[in-house]
Amino acid sequence: MSKKKIIRNLIFVLAILLLVILMIVGLGDIKKIFEFLSNAKLSYIFLAILFVLLYAITYQASLMILTKYRYKDIKFIDLFAISGTEFFFNAITPFSSGGQPFQAYALKRKNMKLADSTSALLINFIAYQVCLNIIAIVFLILYYSRIYQEIDAFIAFLIVGFSINMVIMVGLILIGTVKPIGRFFIFLFDKICKIKFLNRFSSKHDDFVLYIDNMQNAFKEIIKSFKIWVLILLTKIISFLIYYAIPFVGLYAIGVEIQMIDLPYVMALTAFVLTIAIWVPTPGASGGVEYAFKELYSPFIEGYGYSTNDALQISLALLMIWRLLTYYFLILYGFILYLIFERRDRKNNNLMQLEEKSDIMVKENL
Image (cartoon, rainbow, N blue to C red):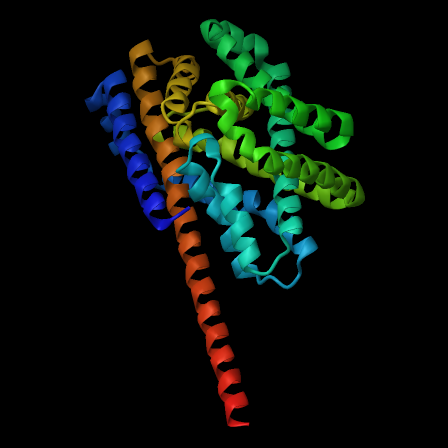
């Protein structure tokens, strides 16, 4: 992604932020929302920020472990920066599609073999999908009846989102473990490309075949390195659980005296928000996330004795805190790590050029 495109996407994301704020304000009473926000307890806001940072670090840990396992020469600061750029590039691209390509490029710049970096990134993505679905299944089993009672009109969206995630996970597993399935998808891809308005994708045949091969190689790596696989699953599950708990801290910040017994349910609600909205085709699933959050959290807050209107205003105030911290704060976090990577990479290239010039001068003098 060129610098011009990055700037263009950032401007687009900021425009979406403005629209989201206007949407939130339009859904509620602006005075009430800002009254709750102005009275928010700073100690809990700082605790929520700490949770976001803990989430980011544990989320990055899986790729760092996988990369270090294959390429021990990479420095910790470079690996930490590269793993964190995902928050930036995923956030500014539709369907969170920008993170992995940049990370593959960045790891190549650090002299890691493309086959190794691709394998690590694919295994990390598989771990993400597996953990996302495992947690969603557990929460669905535990809270389906409660969700159905509180937001029965919204349950269809939850089932659709969950089904899409499950299909993708099962598809990845089948492609990676059953070679005939991989060949079938290649055959299907070629047939689809014969459709008149889709034939421009036929030039991507070799790339698609390579992706299938890489996926199958990634599953071979999982079998060979099963202990590493278990370790990265644990880091991913921990990171998800930390992320899902952030609105719980946010509720305390706003002044809702929520009971600890409801912590798992709050985590489930956050998981369901992402399950419902994850496939909205805008950067950060903006629009879909906000609507799902409001619909899921308003009935829950109302259950704590608030009127329907106050519950709505509290859920919108909570939404602004949660979204600013978990999306826009993480964009800034990822952008800073991107700048660190670029600066270190540029410095390393300058040193290499100086060394090459020095070698040439020595040879000329000899």
